[in-house]
Each structure stands twice: as structure tokens, then as C-alpha cells.
Image 1: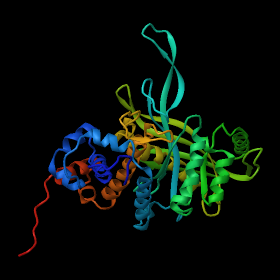
Image 2: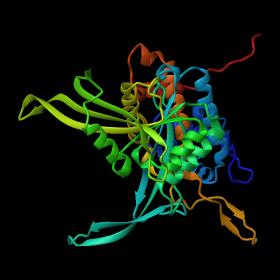
Image 3: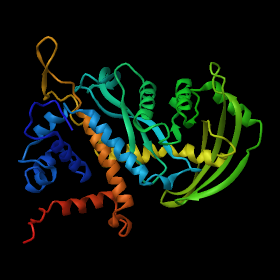
Image 4: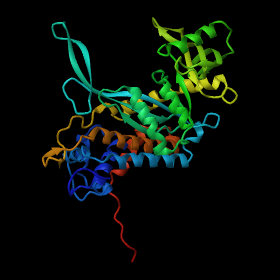
Length: 417
């Protein structure tokens, strides 16, 4: 671990472990961590010679070196794969990952050099419409999704002036260099990425893809809809899950051109689903049904991956939203905006001989430490903790019990007589 401070009294490793402690035990803020850092037990665990305040954390993290954090996240995920943490979720023997984006934070007043900007229409106190500039951050992340343990492999931040698809291409290019091209086999993507550059890059790396298809890919979407409307479904079935009944009709075809500019034939799967479940209406439990239509374009072989499996994979992309971004947002303070626009940063001498603050890496550093804690905690709770397996405790409850145990001072030991 390294940061931009010169000869620091509190090492970057201690700063990392302090923040890691904060995320693992679900502390709500830096202020709460500040109070815990005054206790000798935590100083002992993180290897700090004395107590320190949250201003030291902020000063260090804003100039933190990101490469060791990325290397640690890669190492954790490699160890999880070697330990077969992902094998339980294999689909037809293949490992599955998903990629999608999320907006992390937004503000009308606070901004940093890496903020994206947009014009937003609001109403003032008099009810008149006004336009204001909003500053925000957005990121793209890739996550293992089909096993019980669902760690993030990497994250890429959107830069000013670029779209989410550009950041996604940059992330997809980096992943084989970080993990190798065979770390996973199938990539699930949203409709935004149904583009020729994305499909070509995925195939070049050697992955298969399942991509949601909507009307933004107009030619392929309309060709598939017209074709499926002229023939009966290839399969029909019903399934029950969590008190819900799904009545499903499936169509499957191969050989449709992806785009006019890229006429490479692709496979398209369509699913019409009627979801039936009981809901309370006017104080009575009534049967309620909703209709859904889904289309996916995929490079998977029909002989190895039947239509029902492609449907399963297509719906599996939501695990990136539910078990990834939503979990991080709801239970890990992912959208807190840690150190965003922080001005309290170390300074370095530039080429002109002037002292200037270093680039603010605070938000990116905190998020990487959060992802490391997320991966390790998930693996511990789901694959090791007896509290979760035997007593069926939630991950948050396990964290609270572990925190109560680790807060005790370690016993004194001495060499035997």
C-alpha cells in the first residue's frame, strides 16, 4: 500500500485496514470509525502505534495509490475461483459474469475534476421551472453472478464527455489483462451494449454473450418480432417460484443479421411471460397477473444451450442489479460520496516548481476497498460462517456478532517457561 504523503507516521497499510474494518463491520460513517480508532484493540489489529483521527484517513485516501488495491481485488477473486467458490453456479459447466453501470452520486453544489455534468430542470419555491447544472459520477462494474458468492471483478469510472458504452469497452479491454480471458465464459449485458464494437470485442476475447434486445437495436428487434409473430412458440411451460407462477412461451431463431453494417448472423430468443401472484386489493387477497416480453441476442450454441437456459441467463443479469449494486447501495453505503470533492489533499511539486494538490483518488480508493471487503465478507458468511449456515443469521447480524467479538482486547501471551 502507498499514498502521496511524505514519510507518514501512520502507514498506508494501517489506513487501509482501518477502512476495511469499517466496511466489514458496517460502521455508518467516518465519524464512527474515528471514535473506534481511539481504542487500543483496533490500533493493535491494524498495526498503528497510536490513535489517529478521520482527517488522517481522508488525507491519506485522497492520494492513495490505486494499483495495489486493484491487485488485491484480483488476488482475492483468483483465490475464490481456486477455492471453487463459483463452481456451484456454473451454467452448463460455464462461469457467468454480468456488466452494467450505476450512478454513484449527484450534487448541485459540490464538484471535482472528474465530475460528469448535465442540465436538470427543477422548480423553485415559486413553482417556476429553472435549469441547473448537476454534477455526478457514474461507473461500470463487472460481477460474477451465478454462484452464491458474487464478487465484483473490476470497476471503471466514466470520464467527462464520454458515455457508458465507452467506459464499458475500456473495462472489457482491461479484464483479460487482469484475470486472463478464461476467468469466466459468458457475459450478460444490458440493451445499451447491443452494439457492434461491444459484440466484436467480446468475441475477440473469447467470451460468449447474452445481451438484452430492445428497440434501440431497431433493425434486429423488428426483424425478430416480425419473424416470431408469424409462427407458434417453440416451447410452452409453467413454473413456480416464491409463491409466483410464470406461464412462459418461448421462440428461438438463428441466422438474423446483427445490424446492417455488421450482418454477422446471431441467435435471438423471445420470451412472453404471464406472471401470476396474489396481492391485497381493498383488504382482500386477489390473483393479479402482469404480462412481460423479453428478447435476447446471444452467441451461445443452440445445441449446448437450449432456449430455456438462454432465458435463465437473460434473467440472471438482474442479479448484478439486485445482488450487486442494490446490495452495495442499501447495506454498504456505496452512494455515500466518500471524499468526493475533498480539498484536504497532499501536495506535490509540479514541473513548474509549484506545489499543487495531487489528483483526488479518494472516491475510487474507498470504492475499491469496499469491493474487497464485499468479496471477502460474502465468501466468509456464505462458505464458512456457522452463524449463517447453522443459525440462519443474515450477513449484517453476523457482522455485528463478529464486531462484538473482535472489539475485545486480544489475550496477552508469553513464552513458556
